[in-house]
Length: 116
Picture 1 (cartoon, rainbow, N blue to C red):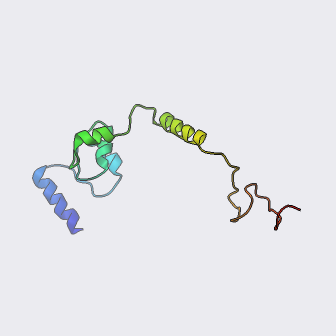
Picture 2: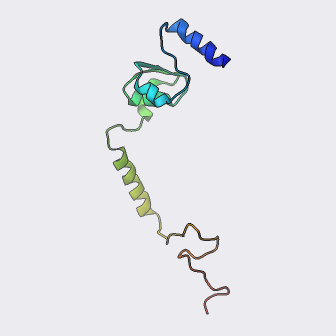
Picture 3: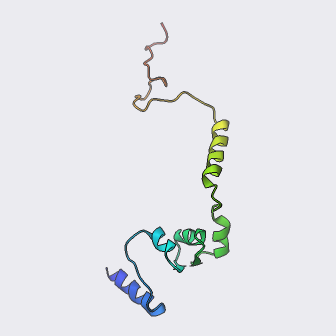
């Protein structure tokens, strides 16, 4: 609790009147903030993706370069990558979730010692 109190005082010195939240969803807080100030945190990506004025110890140009594309088609792009990976992978029959190690992939037991 002392760290929270110290940090709140420090924020008050540099940004008098700023609201300080110590619990809750960081993403929701960022969505509702005017300016995001963070250290080395992935929340900087959230701020940039939401178009917030963002200050971080990370290089802002590098963060922008590394940001995922935000154009409303992320699911489409991810699905295309998955399709390409599935096309490149050799297919094998699915293994039932309750199959014990060594069971055949179709869930039926195989005779020991080979086919009879």
